[in-house]
Length: 255
Image 1 (tube, rainbow, N blue to C red):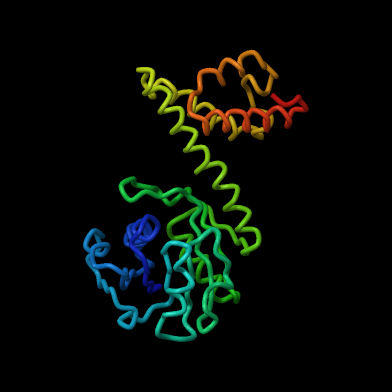
Image 2 (image 1 turned 90 degrees about the vertical axis):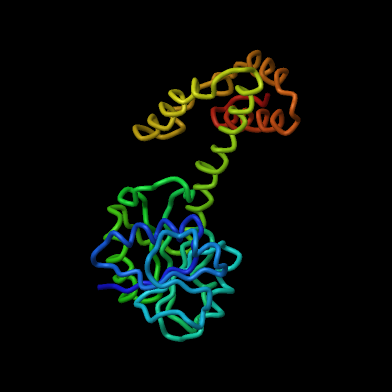
């Protein structure tokens, strides 16, 4: 049985605890969090601690904290020559302290504490400084996911950048669409079938081939009407910039 300690009870950490708790080959021996409040919220019956010097012995320590404190946690670990990994898409493997063996266990997904996720289809991107540790990560990953990839830090940072575009930026555009419908007494739910079909189409072909809309067909009349409807400056600028990007992708002139 593989013994693991998870450091952090945020969006990723809490979901990893839940996922590994259901695996017979994995034992979550302890969960660490800087604050007691985070531990109290966590549905975990095992050992919990707010003190790094009280961490239990384990085969792997998973640091699941915000990117800007990964190095700090790694530096403050009170042991050496153990296997320590982080879960970040944008933090390099080299940012972990070299006093311990290093690795990455990056789940490529958007996580919210109050929303259940199913790890079986979530890509797990792995990296380690030696083959033995990499094989341990692969064994761990395959207990919860069927999508396991070996990806180094250089490629992972570009993957994370792509993820920000297709997830975070797209979600903000959903927010703008939600504001527009709300402000004009329209149900946002009326857009859900369109959102689902747009996401479904790119499973069948490249996004470039699936593009539709006024910017793709160079319908400047419609685009100008849309701009006249937008009274929030940043939304107007976003509309212009995105329309320009689409138009130029298909060899069109700027709006």
